[in-house]
Length: 325
Image (cartoon, rainbow, N blue to C red; front, side):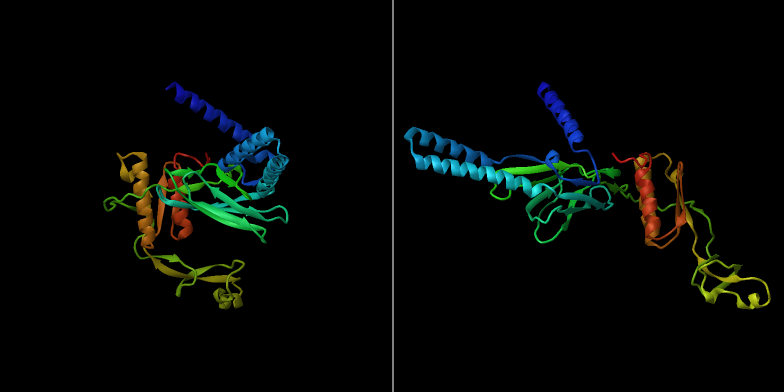
């Protein structure tokens, strides 16, 4: 227990330090402050071999052994400069994150740009528990990278700090950075099927006429609005001095229903949201208008991708606010 407590405190201090050194941002340019470099396992073995060679050269007083040892040591120094330069100057931009349901894979898009006309090789990228990618910037200024990771519970999901590293050119050193791109995926409630809804509140009865642009059934007149089609203008009325009016046409709409918070009385918050999410997707699949009423939230009836996304967003963020953590 004491070891775990010490380890936990060390991790907390390290996170606080890394947050001060590399704070969250949508765009990060790598410089000396944001890059770490250390010998790799191969590099440590290489250094151990150099030490043995140096001891042998000292013991036998062999000039050729000295020359070879110092030559290889110089190669190690040059590799350090090239490994650092392979990350230095890169700019990483957060583009977008795909919304998903709990347990699904969300797609995170990241853009890597080079600051100078210098090639960058074998850049390895990954988030904790995500897929990884190995990219190079050779003859091009930017590369878009897509990483996938399974999202967690409802609300905003952060994949954590992005690891970007390289061991180019010789693998003797590992150069890396941990950056927080302030990129979040919206996680919807898990849809949960329920029995057929009863007592749905409706705004329009079946067969009610509503104005619909582009329909063929005449509905009435309204004042002319800028942008109205010339075909809609009531020219006969204008000729009689009645002013400019536009014709309205109508279609016969199906009922418009409300998904209510109180439909699932007695259930917990997450269960209610899951049932409402299921029925929102169900009505969307049926091409029926639907609205949403939650405590403090009202989404007027509608349909289509934008309306569905708004309803799902309200369900995802209910009780959590829009704050991203």
